[in-house]
Each structure stands twice: as structure tokens, then as C-alpha cells.
Image (tube, rainbow, N blue to C red; front, side, top):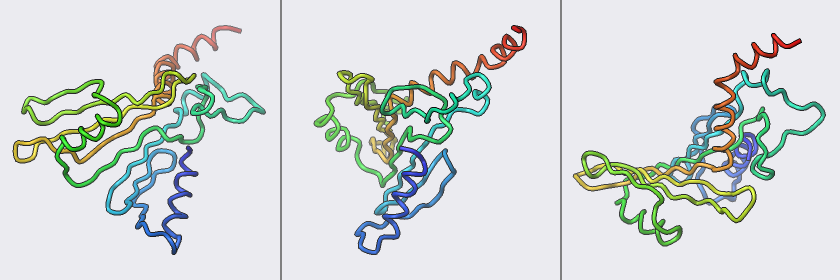
Length: 188
């Protein structure tokens, strides 16, 4: 989903007099992030758009609509911000309760790390459906922090696997832009 579509969705929900949910848009940066408070829980929607510098290396094809990588798996230049990640922040909850619920639904975490204090760290669940082509889904990260020497969680992040691949491709191109421009200037 694009920045505009998600923003419009929350604006309509916030202004709907029949809505039972309390929704506030706290902060927004066009095509970058959208901070929403929904029933007392903070949601940070993060968006990705291809850096402007890559326009010179990978110009957009004329006359064709912008491809939607979430549907087609294409990695074209993104002029509009597309949803990449959602972060949820809430009051402290014992990590064991959250981990138990996620393990019931998704199985054991793919990776776990524990900090030097033996309490803080993170656990990562891979939620990718590999039978689909391109694979759909992403990764859930449960952040642990110490409180009274026990592990608690106040934040969970979800990252899209498809958009991660787009960012990886753009990252590789971004650091070779100068070389590509130089080669284009040298070749008649």
C-alpha cells in the first residue's frame, strides 16, 4: 500500500462519527513515515521510495504505469512511498507471553539474540510463504528489554520481504551510481 492510501484510510476512520476506535495521526512525513495512535497503541508505518539519485541510472519507462512490487515482484523505480514496515509500541508486557503466542501461531523463532545482561535482545520470526512466486510475507522482530531484571517487550516490528529485496537492489545500485554515470559519459 502507498503512503497516501494508508493515510486516507486512517483519516476516514478518525473522522467517522460511528467508529468505536480512537484514532489519531500524531506525525507524518510524506512517503517516509506515519505515526498513528490507535486505542492507546502507537503504530509507526514506514515507507520506502527509491532514492532520487537512482533516477539517472534507472530512468522510469515512459508510458507505462509504475509497477507494484507487492503484486508482481517487480523492482522498478518507486516514485511514491510504499509500505515497508510497521512498528507497534505498547506498554511493557512480559516477553514470555508474547513469545508464547507467536510460537503457537508461527512456530519457533528463526533467530534469537540475548544481550550481555541476559535479559535484553530480540527474536525474529520468518513469516514468508515460499510456495508463492514471488514469496509473500516478511519478518516479525520482538524486541526484549530488561525491567527489574526480567525480560519485557514493548515493541514489535514487521518488515516486508518483497520490499527488502527492492531495497537490497537499490542499495547495490546506489553505491555504483558514479561509476555508471562516468561510463555513460565515456561511451558515445
